[in-house]
Amino acid sequence: MGRPAEEQCFGCQCMAAFPGLWLANGTFSEEYTCEQAKVQNLIPEFHWGGPKALMWCRRFTSALNRPALGPGAPVLTRCPDGLLSHTMCRFSGSYSRIMKRNRPPYIDFETGFPKSEAAKQTVVAAFTLAKQQKLEKLLEATPQKTFRGRVIKQLSTRRIRHSGRNDLGRICTRHREGGAMQRLRFVDFKRGRKDIPATVLRIEYSPERTSHIALIQYQDGVLSYILAPLTLRPGDQVVASEAANIVPGNCLPLRNIPVGSIIHNIELRPGAGGQLIRAAGTFATIITKDREYATIKLRSTEIRKFPLECWASIGQLSHLERAMRFKGKAGINRWLGWRPSVRGNAQDPHTHPHGGGTSAKHTKRPPVSPWGILRTGYKTRSPLKPLGLIVRRKLPGKMQKKFGIAS
Image 1 (cartoon, rainbow, N blue to C red):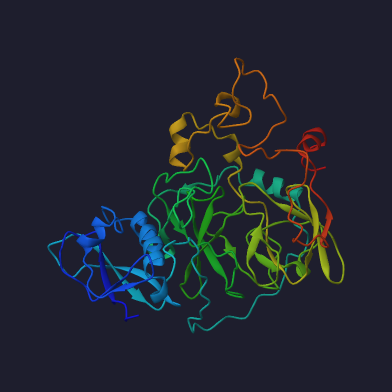
Image 2: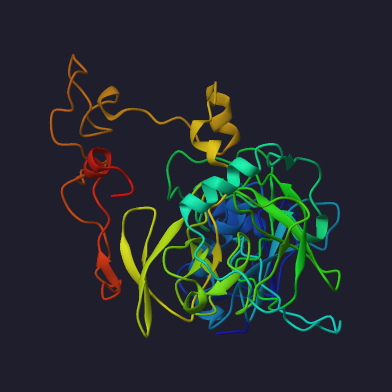
């Protein structure tokens, strides 16, 4: 077989012949035009542009040019003919997915600013829920006002939504759409700048999360976002240090946090950054500690152990009134990226197992998904996840209502 062409034109109206093209039957043609390919239905009439063109290009080239691909894969480029608006396929040695993820990397850096000596720990008593309630009464005259102006450009990026689709354009999660345009804030869940005091400049509203965030400025002038506790106010001092005081906003390892304190933004693995207790109004409580682990009760009533080298922040998260929010209209859900959800018993029987019939008073069977999978009655936790650190599984919803969330 001959050597395949480096560039081949798909979907255009030109009659120019290219050096060659692999055919569907595995043979190689030295002279093969786009018009001849259309006649033999090898290339359909298709307007190129958007992700559908890329998907079709991948399927087409994998079928027609399978012997020529090897380790490489097709990548879209523009046709050199400026008069024709079509797309060409250039073969290269590498191909990357077009899906863009909202995962801003954490960059650890040093400014060279001389660090001051870390202050000694003066507040060592546990910061309990009762102590926070007393602090809230003292701060009633200065409520936590949120700044809703423009976000700092260097600390944010445009949020990319996929409307529940994967890289092939297929729906993986139903009832999702684009929603309103948002900018993602780069929140420092890791609190990587240790032993550098910072001042809270303002409390900001964050559209992509339920809790508020705080804009802080370190002593060397670096700006950063952190999760805002309930009693944090502009002008307060926060620090991430092993010798930090037990006050809201400070970040310490679990080894140095006393038993009974309420915490948030807890690490699952040392150095991985906070992953648990990040929603509005949530907190966890340290129950006991031993030589290796700290036993913590989470907001979901689950009790599990965490290594003492994991870091956590002090206090309860802000925006408690978020649970009392009244949306008022269906359009607000559309702004948030949610499409309407139709009940199963209101659909046809070929669309949903609950559908059909002349009455909609019952589901005709135990609640199931559109694919017939039971909604309740069995555990959905993956068997690959470790269970050794979980002391008590979370209580079911009925028991939480009966005994309370804090039981």
